[in-house]
Length: 386
Ligand code: PHB
Image (cartoon, rainbow, N blue to C red; front, side, top):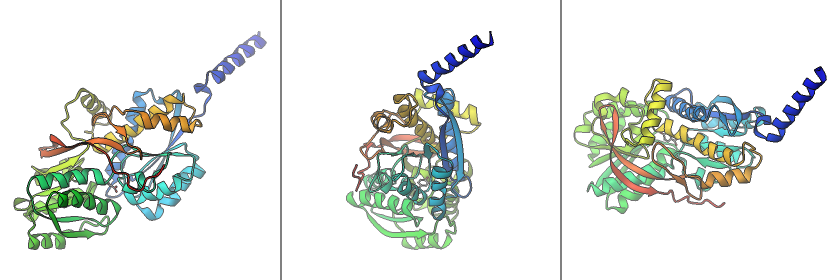
């Protein structure tokens, strides 16, 4: 009797092994995200969004259970190489999802492009990640720094503003955001008359605000995000500047921040690949599920995390969970149309979303959509050869 039972059990195990997915070990996913510092809330929103999509798939991807490993990258580029190496070598993750900060992301891309692992960037806009550093195993579910910035430059020029002062943190994201804005604004007849910066993640804005008041441009264009964006928008209004010099920026300036910014942000115009009031069945379903699960309203970062998981679902489904079929998996991810809460998007040749950039206006606690600033905007992918 025991012999029969053993044989049946063995036979069952063999079937499972031959059947494929069940016999495969857990898929290891490494979250390399900021969980402390000015970008902490962004890291959490990304992780929440990612987990929500995996839960919607039954907690597994193509039949494989998931094991998560987490690293707090602290948005510190000087620790980035060690952190990514630890995930790849010690933890042996199959997929890395990270990160928020462009400087950290560039260090990650440099390591990952020499490895077998897959990197999905759920925020950091560093142009080089889908430009000169592009690689078959690097994908982005978010945006390039150039995209929302370029759209805002176009909007500002169309609104007949002539002069702008820019202000941002001095690192890749700030530099590239200002660069994208300036490119479109000056093409449309405007002029950036002064470029102000401070070191990341400093928030001592007073001297720079005094300089803006003295320069008296038509508008100010600012790139800040997270805790820094909250403080900048409040300080700008606190100095009374919002009454005379409109403050523009990419939507990071007011996304996930409106509870804290309150009155100071009202009426602000920003450009981004997401908005709070799209009111499509897809976005409404996502927002409801997110709010129910996390007791929080989603923001652009949550959407980007959710879509990082959607990209992975597309790849894993195509290879039935066998991530060693790398080329096949990459080809499926390249071809997929992501059914995003932001609106469906495809990836460009360098693996960056081709997407509509919305013009939004702050009303109460919402970034309300008031139009599409640029339709189906593709990053130029400068320097990408694959
Ligand atoms: C970046 O460093 O690329 C970055 C960080 C925060 C944002 C957007 C871009 O909200």
